[in-house]
Amino acid sequence: MDVQLIIEKYQKAIIQIATQTGTGTGFYLKEFDLIVTNAHVVADNAEVTIAGKAFDKALSRVWYTDRKHDLAFLQAPADIELADVQLGLYEQMKDGDAVLAIGHPYGLNYSATQGVISKVDRIRDGLKFIQIDAAINPGNSGGPLVNMNGEVIGVNSFIIRGGDNLGFALPVSYLREALKLYLPNKGLATARCFSCDYLVTTANIDSKKYCPSCGTEIQLPEIPEKEIEPVGTAKTIESILKELGKDVRLAREGVNMWSVKEGSAKIKITYNAENFFVAGDAYLCQLPADATKIKPLYEFLLQENFRTHGLVLSCVKQNIILSRIVYDLDMTVENGAAAFRNLFQKADYYDDFLKSEYSCVDRLEE
Image (cartoon, rainbow, N blue to C red; front, side, top):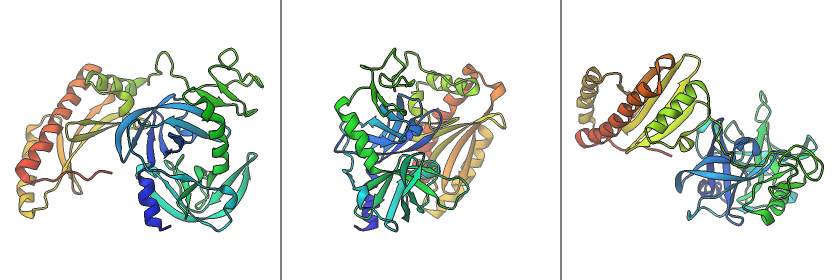
């Protein structure tokens, strides 16, 4: 199968996953109507944020976790048409076979890297892994390893840091086994015991915390009665977002990172703990294609920077960005909400104004 066709197909099946503590990749299996990823991507969360080519950010329930094999299954979005990708046969793979690793490394969405299987059955911690030389990086975790027939033959799981393209994927045979175990309990919070492989569910868990087979302490992916909140400045930021009517669960994009939309503008909020400031960057439109419009646009942006208190308009490559910086020691929920409310409102206003008055164009987004 042509590599470009494989990549094009998988872009419609690849899922972005975000939690309070990080980001990763997943992929949709239409046959089972669920999303597959790594257990370490979802961590201890029973709900995560997902997004894909065919849908905006949404919350997804984690139904199955398996620490031993580093697998997790998530609820797929309802009424969304996603690509139908197939599982291949691990037993047919050989050393030297060409493969593709697809995911979101370092936030570079829908990246695909090509390589070969260095060793089809590398043993680590008592499990077989597919060792590959296709580059995988943080953010790739949970994405599919695909053969040249366009079939999933592994789940990208980890790398050896400091190594040169030393990546490892869990073979699809383990995934098939986990699916077979989980499907009769679909829709129940389940966890596979990492000691004895027994499937623990809400119906059979012993004393609400132990495997009924071997007694190992197990944590099911159940939604807690009270959500665990961040602390310090991160808690203040999320309180501000709530005050402004934003769903913080959907806004989270990893550690000290949030993203929201206001009208047609996208605003990224980051907390720089080393330098003690919170930055809000509203990505507006892009520079106009008509070169005669650029000089008057620059003049307008410079003039506006003298008029806007605490806000700065700038150009980064082709993007026009409206920014606001607040130092964490000076920020309270009250003054922070006022500052970011102003940023949000001005961002939506400037985005529309610059398009109508200076022929600026919509920003390209993945």
